[in-house]
Amino acid sequence: MTQPVKNEYYTSTVLDYTHQGLGVVKIDNYPIFVQDVLKDEKIEFKVIKANKKFGYGKMTKLIEPAAERIVPPCEYYYQCGGCQIQPLSYNEQQGFKKGTVEANINRQAKLGVDVHDTIGMASPDHYRNKSQIPVQKVDGELKLGLYRPRSHDIIDIKHCMIQKNIHNDIMNDVRELLKMFNISIYDERRHKGLLRHLIIRSNHDDSEVQVGFITNGHKNPFGDIIKILVEKFPVITSVVQNINMDKTNVIYGSKTKVLHGAEYITDELLGKKFNIRSRSFYQVNHEQTEKLYTEALKIADLKGDETIIDTYCGIGTIGQVAADHVKKIIGIEVVDSAVEDARENAKLNGIDNAEYHLGKSEVVMKQLVADGVKPDVVFVDPPRKGCHQDFLDSLVEVAPEKIVYISCNPSTLQRDLKILHEQGGYSVSPVTPVDLFPQTNHVEAVTMLTKD
Ligand SMILES: C[S@@+](CC[C@H](N)C(=O)[O-])C[C@H]1O[C@@H](n2cnc3c(N)ncnc32)[C@H](O)[C@@H]1O
Image (cartoon, rainbow, N blue to C red):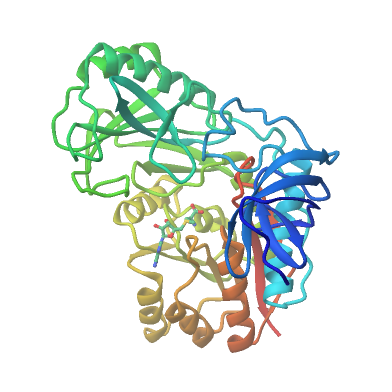
């Protein structure tokens, strides 16, 4: 294997995708990753970085385009870091996601299980029900939008094709109102100024919208803006201000005040109602979340007499959607406002067989096992970093008959499945990718583990 020379040009055919959606080409077996190219395309590229074992390239000529190549539908695509795979037709995007799951589960973890076709969206745009919009003032010009890749420079965006249309409309009005009322804008280099982020969240039919201002300080100069916004968009049923005075990339601070209407918005998911407070996790794609949960419940095949643990439960969605088919639900979640939501949601849905525990899964699960709790089915839906080893140890110890694992990161999914297979003697059922994040390289998947 000879290392290619930086700044030199080469010609090759794209062999595959990385899990980030970059194309893989090889020069004398040395892999080089290139953005915005499709599998099977013949390209000329320049080597821009050459590490010991792999490098990065930039396409300089598209010699033979793939049939699945399309013109990115978004005008900001080549500047913006929000989406990564728009040159791929939606069919190709779904194939890439299935391939990523397959590579992790079968090539990496060698579990040898089937991976189903990706469950896609009917119309893969305007799905995001939560928009987190950074705000900046550069040389006197106000910018609201998304960051450029690997930077904190904001591209001023008027229309994002993955966020809901009403979010685009509100974002554009807020931009003008911030100018009109000369609102102080946060400058992260000097750690001065007030407004850091605008958050817009809505329910599935946009009948309830929450607007959030994240501020560096307690001042509230938003009264006139809120009045004008609510008059134009009566569906804004909640406006909150979250105070974050830390020098950090983390968006939310710990204190939230209600400036107008309710503290939360309410959404409906598979016939159940959910109150969602501003800091609680809620899946961003309603249509696809219903498909994901339906798949999870289908494979769990609940009979009605089971005790289930719904861990990493957020506001209690999965467990409560399953409530009519189980004897008891035990939820575990680390964010306090989400646990508060989950308890309230159980009442809202007339569910009296659910209890919620605040804390880390790895700690609470151990305690539950020590207390003699014997779940029949455990639903696991961790963040990207996957499950903590202590949690997996407790799971192996308590040995539920079924574990339904929902994952937003195939790499930690394969790691955890392998552990449960090797240490717990579980068999892994076929894995189904569900596309929760069209146009981006994020991959969601669901599977079940059963005792042999
Ligand atoms: C991917 S979300 C899933 C939430 C929920 N199951 C749903 O579908 O809406 C992961 C959740 O795990 C929570 N979380 C993160 N680390 C945790 C931990 N160590 N223990 C318990 N919950 C945790 C997060 O706050 C978040 O609500």
